[in-house]
Length: 416
Image 1: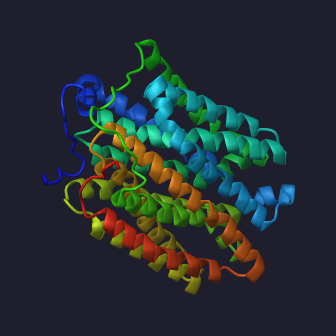
Image 2: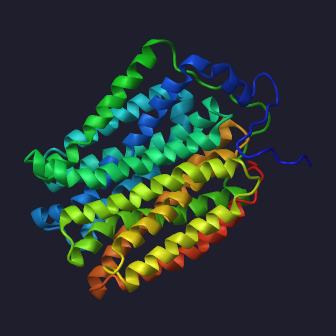
Image 3: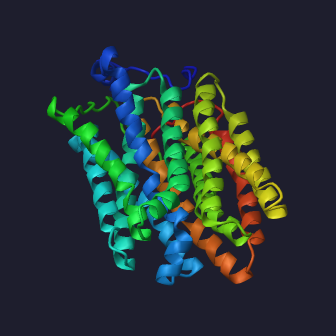
């Protein structure tokens, strides 16, 4: 048996291999930086339209009469869309090309933001559904695109992409309420503002389509197969599932948690931004460290431990060290999120496998994660306090560490 390649490396099995296709279609060096920035702009769009709901959740509840459980359903809807629509992304990318697919989902994202301009519940849920479907496809396509065009720098680009995800969420968490108040908008206007970011991305990507046909990598030779029977693929998928559950539950309810302990809406948004700001740090550093190591198990365990310590701190002393717990939680979330995304490329040998592993991981991951915000809100309603939900998240950090350690042992997935 051949020894596994270095993390992030690709293999070639002939002139028609996906690796060869990646090399032949990669942008020229002089255009690599602008192209990388365009790719990262897509990542920057994936979280503000979702995190803005968390920042305005109390305002939405008061204006519409939503219960905590129903508000959890609203926050969960994008995650359900991520899980349901992620498996469609590889097929769309093969049929239409990655670039055209990205432009289409950015337009869908823009449409979803526009629908939410109407201050009523049906448009709010409809727009959120469209946004969830768009982000689901973009999540998968960007992972495969990084494998295709930045195969020598998978760790760096995965880290930068993760930082854009977290950074976009941090900006939305900190700026949504001040922008809404400064512009004199209601909650629907505050949500729709982030559609302008999608418009910028569309304007950046549209000229790329005019310069030539979308590049479609050719299929790799050899037998096909499914990743659903591969143990390593399941380790990657379950690790991504547990981190997604903790990530989305924490970021959904953290502002409300602080507000219930006497913080203002603006201050609660700042604390969420602190969490995401520190998450950017580990999002940048962890994938780079991961690519330089043959094994990444220690990184997964460390990130999981940071999450657990922060959650215990929130339960034990919510106002005693609010900024510290937000910072530690951010460091842990950034580490496990970026590592989960990096695994999708590092554990795959080809572009096609990266797309399939990304689709599988996000399908499993987000359908599991969708339980989190709703269940957490329901437990809060039933118990009248936050402790039970926080303890539940600490428990989930244990299998997250275990599956992350398994996914980080090295090797590549093998379709069966």
